[in-house]
Length: 145
Length: 145
Image (cartoon, chains in turn blue, yellow):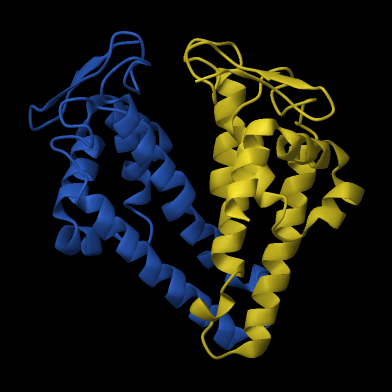
């Protein structure tokens, strides 16, 4: 798989020779990669597990469902603000494009939404914007339209 | 660090030479190790995040809090039953003792509790029991008493 590609704005992504989507097993950035991956999967993602269909957890109680959505929405923002402090540029792991960037590309469209990211987490938002501009991603997006 | 130790019942634990608590980076069991680790951290653990202090999420609504505890308790049992189908013996990764076994050793004491595991997930329960019997674990447990 090609490990090189260019965005509309000319930013390149490069990645390790052995894997295009993650730092190699013995790469110095591997721990940083795993920490961010686990944070997205085990802290941020569950806010959707428990907030997307609140009725699954507090069935029939509309007030409680609203509170659960509100609580998980607030918690998610706190977690994204923390992640913002650990985001590199142009990618999460600075020069190395990885699956973390792709993961966030998708999540950027979910609550709290692009406008919130633009305002509150500019580094994360820029990573998402750049990822969306990668020619490989644009090709896939075209097919999904 | 010693990678060998014996339980009271004579079962040994052995692990890779490069790391005592996880299969080596290039070991065939590494993917199985990571899958179980992620499952514990991103699926099972969040049932406690959202079920342990329900008032954090549905503040002041006692009925809703009860429902949230009930819902996360039920979901957790489903997840443990799934994990039971992927548990080796004597350890999660068969002959290789790993941090997955230690992770579960702690979680076995949490809801739904040891009695439930004994009855509903005998393979998981046996892993927890064996882990508790390891001389290294017993030494730490003694210090914590």
